[in-house]
Length: 181
View 1 (tube, helix red, strand yellow):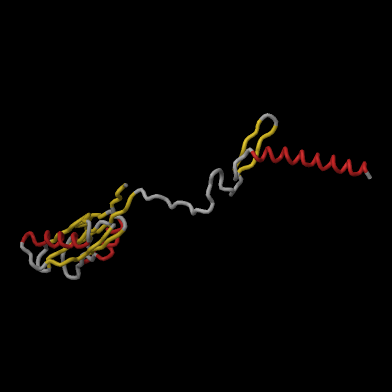
View 2 (cartoon, rainbow, N blue to C red; view 1 turned 180 degrees about the vertical axis):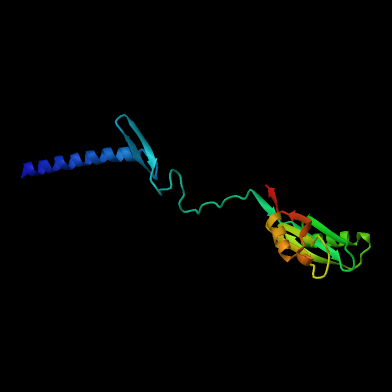
């Protein structure tokens, strides 16, 4: 019985010695990492999802920091009801500013009956007119994401008499502006 107790004690101590070696090896790595390496080389690697050294998993991650801000830009087109006089504005900071400028430009030659035909923001505008005026003719005025799209949209609205062609009278873009911080 004494021999069995002695063997148990030896096995127990041998087990403790093995645990102590593993504990000493793992104990040299910071929380959230585990020992790596072999003979003559050792180090620590982060435990996947463990947060790494000094990580505070109780705090939410910081949101990304803004690097700037977009500012909208506005444009408008106005025309006199009784004359061919027109006015436009491009790249204004507010819709009101764009409307005011377009109406003022329209009235420069004395027109008192100018009205806004189109307002737009952060896009382009095109005004397409028939090459030849006549019965059934109609101008096309439209906006689009690009100048090409605005022209295409306006051409779809333009109607020239007797199968005539329409041509671009005016086009411009009021693109948004990015302010860097």
